[in-house]
Amino acid sequence: MLYRQTIRWARAAELALAIDAGRERAQEALDALRRQRDDDRRPYLCLPARTDDLPAIEARAEAIRASGVGDVVVLGTGGSSLGTRALLALDGPTLGASSGLRVHVPDNLGATLMDAVLRDLDPARTHFIAVSKSGGTAETVAQTLTAFEAVSAALGPTRAAQAFTLVSEPGGSPLRRLAGQWGVATLDHDPDLGGRYSVMSVVGALPALLAGFDIAALRRGAGRVVDQALAPGADPAHVPAAEAAVLGHVAGEAAGAAIAVLLAYDDRLAPFTRWWAQLWAESLGKRGLGSTPVAALGPVDQHSQLQLYLDGPGDKLISLVKPVTAGTGPRVAPALTAGAGEGRLDYLSGRTIGDLVDAEADATAEALVRRGRPVRVLTIDRVDAETLGALMMHFMLETVITAHLIAVDPFDQPAVEEGKQLTRAALRGTGDALAAAVPAGLVSDLGVSAT
Ligand SMILES: O=P(O)(O)OC[C@H]1O[C@](O)(CO)[C@@H](O)[C@@H]1O
Image 1 (tube, helix red, strand yellow):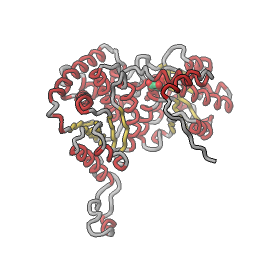
Image 2 (cartoon, rainbow, N blue to C red):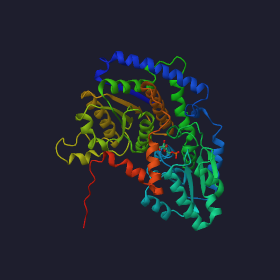
Image 3 (cartoon, helix red, strand yellow):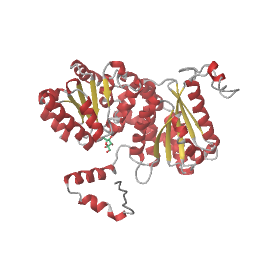
Image 4 (cartoon, rainbow, N blue to C red):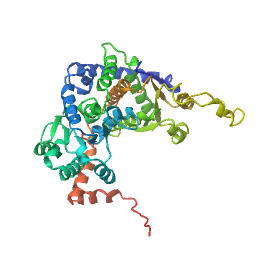
């Protein structure tokens, strides 16, 4: 078993008609997805079964390894980096530790962070992979230009060019043109593959291969989910992604569940929840529709968010990702618990850390159900590449099926363009655009000065 999905909601029986109607619509979505996969129209559905693209990616990875570097920095943001982080996080806190290469993904642009990257890494032993589907995202362009300048200054432009790889769609974008002028090796990003659906392509595969991550296992797990969901005659009630999309839709419509929480009980899955948040938000947040994703981590968020989930507004669908951890990790010595006083720590005596986390996840789900919250638990046997591939494909399908249910296009993100235009205008000094945009709704503009 890669994962098992359990959905519990006290109101499900009362909403049976709406759920049945949702399943009928989900059936349409599954039929459409099957046709798209069979006609090779949606690359994210076909990637799991592909192997023909891997030799070129492996060859580039080998060339980077052969150049003798010790560090690899992935420059990119959003769909060009969040998935990569999610893959590499399976290795634990030290990215790429299993391959001997350290792979860094500073996906959030920041002056201090970029200063640190350029100051702390040896330009002669570092390779930069710039990933941008459009080749024009300001953050990634700025990262790439500052990094290229720093390496050129240290080693000269010829060696700097060898220290870079660009992954971007073909065309005349800024990064594509610069890479051509500099002589930087470039791999094509499939123009038909949206960034937030691209993790299994060269986007995630190149850094992942360098980090020793098993990309074939990732695709295998994803492939098993696609095959099950799109099997001819598959009943949406037996397809986890479809069933979850229906529940989420009904919970949104009938119970006002406008927030979707993904609470993962393993640190290694925290970046996965951030990848999911982009997938969910950008794919569904359109025309006043969609639900707000919250990426959460257990058990720590039990001690910060859970009060709200249990006792705040009933506007959330809460999904737990629960690795089976019972019996794993360090064990609490009975001899030590005895010293805490009669019976006070008996529940921990002889138990492992994994026992505690496992019990906490179950208890959290139960407490939420008792409060009448809609709860879905995704139980996984292992936190590994194959399971992650299955979960990622599950959520891509759940997102696209939800998009069908609310009638939005899951593959565009038109609204973010305005902020990008305003940023460019501000930097060009034509900030009038910003000035004109703000005063209309300005409510308050205060500050506090420290002397
Ligand atoms: O890969 P690109 O084109 O640099 O885009 C990065 C991210 O920016 C967005 O376009 C949003 O601004 C995302 O959809 C995308 O994943």
